[in-house]
Length: 327
Image (cartoon, rainbow, N blue to C red; front, side, top):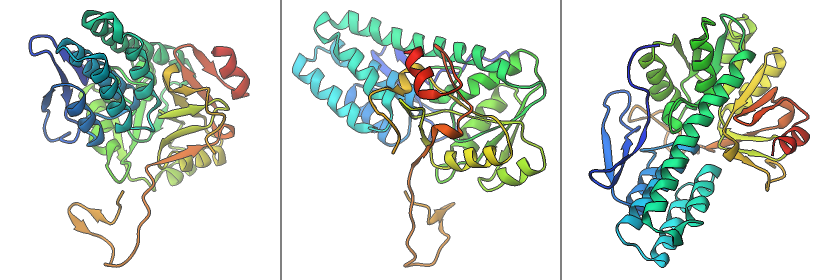
C-alpha cells in the first residue's frame, strides 16, 4: 500500500456547510471535488453518476438531509427532500435505508441529524473494514482476483466492499493481484477500480468484459469477488449487468464466487430477485436503425454464490437460513 490518505469520496464540509463529493465522472483524468448544497443538488449528482455505489450515495443523501436541516428546513420540506433523494436511485437499497434512518430523527433538531449522518458515514467505513477482515481469509495466497464494476472506496464511505476484501488480503501479505473488468457501458472498472487500486499500489490488470471465460479456462483466475446493489432474502444478488455471466463462468470452472456487501444492502423484505450501448468514444459503433438493449443490472441466483460476506458474518449457504440467522 502507498502512504497516501485513505480514499473517502463523500465528505461533509463544516466550513461551507455543504456536501463534498469526488466527481467520479471525471476520473481517471481529473480529481475534482463538488461542493453541493442540499437535497436537490445531491439528488442530481446521484442521477448523473457523479457519486455512485450504493453505500456512497446513502452517505451523500444523509449529509444532504443534515444540510437541509441546518439551513432551517421545516419538517414538510425535509420530507420532500427525503422523497427526492430516494427517487434519484431506487435500485440502491442503501439510499432508502439511509434516508429512513435520517427521517426517524427529523424532529430531533439539526445537530442530531448531522451527528446521525456522521454516524452513517463512520459505520459504513467500519463495516467495510470488517468485511475485509472476514473476507481476506477466504482468499488464497497469491490469488488473482476478478472483480466487476466498482465496489471499492469510491463506492462506499471508504475502503470498499469487494475491494475491501482485496485490500485486506493485500495488507495481510497474501501477494494478491486483481483483474478488473472494464464494465461497459460506463466503464466503472476501467475508470474507477483500476484507478483506485493503482493509486493504492495494488497490482491491477484491465480486462475487456468478454475475456473472463478464456482466462478462467487457462487457470489464470483464482476467484471472483463482486459487490451488490441489493441482496434478497434468499441470497439472490442484484448488481451491475455482467455479474450473472461471471457467476455462471465461475461455476463452470469451479471457482469461488464471493459477494461482499454491507448488511444495509440485505433486503429481507424482498423474497427473491425474480442505456445506451450504440456509442463508444463519441462515435456510433452500429448502423443507424439497429436497436440496442441496455439493462443496467442483472440478478445472480443464490445458487451460484459461494458466500456473501457482510460485516455481521459470512453466509455460505443455504443463504435463506444463514442470512436470517445473521439478521
